[in-house]
Image (cartoon, rainbow, N blue to C red; front, top):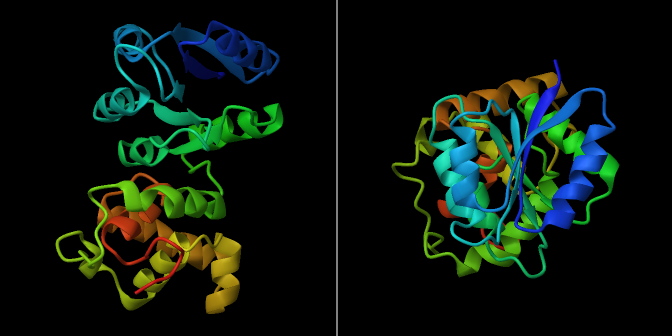
Length: 226
């Protein structure tokens, strides 16, 4: 079955370019488009979508709030935030709103296609080191990110010592393979720990693990841990 993709961007030329790339793939189809968040929410009421490619800066309703409303729905499609990175200070908020990751708008086609497939399969699409760089840049600007640890009440106290150790390494930008090497574990064991962390903390993916680690103060902007 093809991956059903929706394009949400106020720039028609960008949507056209993405549509052409996706149309050439045997396992993907663009089933809907929208030029702003309000239109996107309306279209989603009557169209089945698996993955939404979401612009951030749009008229009427921006991509962050649109993402939040989409992800609050039962059986919601996965959302990929599209950002210019250097100019866009809303990508972090998009991740907090429930997006499974973010991509640069000028991403090479092969990376975009791989990201869509990864999101569809339930994985986060952002390389941990890339996520860390984004959070390092923007987390000081967020009111919800304080200097003091706020792990109490976040569910982190329910983690075992090993799970907490894995969570900190995920938040510092290490891949499963790198965590396995650091802790002398198999990648399968690390993956199991990550899965348990997601379940205990009620998180969608490892991107949200990173967000929570920054919000609770377990990891500081700059990559350091407490």
